Each structure stands twice: as structure tokens, then as C-alpha cells.
Amino acid sequence: MPESTHCIFCKIIRGNIPAIKVHEDDHTLTFMDIQPASPGHALVIPKTHAANLLEIAEADLLAATRTVQRVARAAQKALAPDGIRIVQTNGTAAGQTVFHYHVHIIPMQEGQRIGTHGRALANPEELKALASQIRDALEH
Ligand code: AMP
Ligand code: ZN
Image (tube, rainbow, N blue to C red; front, side):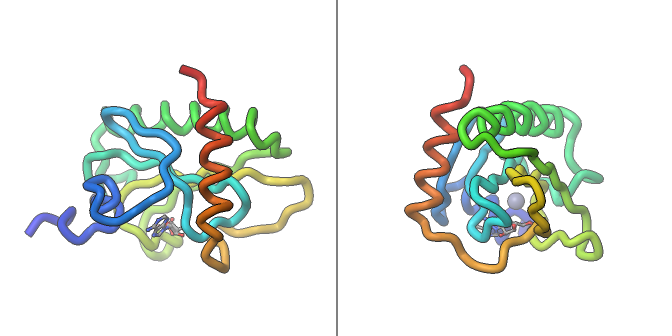
């Protein structure tokens, strides 16, 4: 059975489990992290399954990176954070918990001391509102 069969992010891509989407194109999907480290925390994933940076095909890596820049610019415009942290984990020892390549986009405020992972599930209505603010700020 292919690895993607049980992969939670592949299930999101297939529409088998819900996600609050920010942006989608032919090669990437961006959605809100369900357990955000800070408001506006989003994840960018390639649509083709690859476990991590070591395995991802170059074309998917480039597509994902392009989307990361677009969404980070939109988050900057929409939410005006003091900074944006970009995090990408490879392997359990590095803190990876979902084994489908993903890039965290985490808006940061001055003095904020947070990790990559939030401690609690977010309110879906708040996630939807943040997703639409970021979506509206995307340049086409
Ligand atoms: P990492 O620990 O770098 O592998 O990051 C995985 C991220 O995926 C964590 O921040 C989780 O909160 C997030 N996550 C896990 N399942 C879901 C889901 N169904 N929808 C949205 N985000 C998720
Ligand atoms: Zn996958």
C-alpha cells in the first residue's frame, strides 16, 4: 500500500478529511494549522506525497517554496506581524510529527517566545477568519 494511503495530509488533499484552506494551485495546498503556535499559523504542502526535504522532488520543492513566499507576503499584509518564522522539520528528532513535507508559516510578534507547535486546538471560526484575511491579501 502506498505511503500516501494513510497520510493525513494526503487525505486533506483528497478531500477525505476537512481543512481550512487558504490557497490551492496545481502543485501545492495551503491550510491553517489546526493547533497554531500563533494566530495565522499556516502550512504549505506539495500535492505529491514526499516525507520530507530529503525526499521531495525538486519541482515540488520549488513550487512549495514559491507558495511559501506568496502566503508569507499575504500574511504580512493581512496581519502585520513583527516577523514571520518559517519552519520545516525532518524526522522525529527534529520535531516532525506529520511525515508529508510541509512548511510552517508562523506570524510572530515582538517578544513572543513560542515553539513550532501550539498547545491547543484552535477555534475553527477564528481559523476561518484568519484564512480569509490571508486569502484576501494574496496577490494574483
Ligand atoms: P510537524 O510537527 O513539523 O510535523 O508539523 C505538523 C503540524 O501539522 C503541526 O503543527 C500540527 O498542529 C499540524 N496538523 C496535524 N494535523 C492537522 C490537520 N488535520 N489539519 C491541520 N493541521 C494539522
Ligand atoms: Zn502525504
